[in-house]
Image (tube, rainbow, N blue to C red; front, top):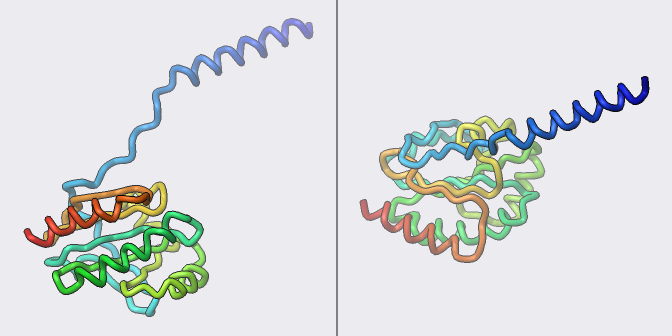
Length: 172
């Protein structure tokens, strides 16, 4: 009798392995490129609400970040330099924290002494609309509100790619 159950168990295990092996790879994250950027309203570090559509007519750099993501910490100073350099040319940089603890995220952002607005997406609604899977994620939105560039993560050289695309969008 034990042999019979053992055979059933082994057969079940083999069937399960076959199902797993034949399962297709997970679908790629849908791209927002060349689509309208989803509009949102989020509360900022200063307590005011900001709506993305308020910046129509300007180029917007959205940066989704989390205080626990090391690459976010590396990217923020680069974004601050970009903001300082290109704000007069029509660029708006918005940092969107996806931390669930708004107080701790606010303290972290404050310690970075950033010149651009920090917004809080504590329930990750906006992050879902933008298909954010990994931090940081940077998106460039053109003057018409269309997503024209997206980058996941941050490594040396990404700042140059942002600047190339950003300058192109500011000239349009």
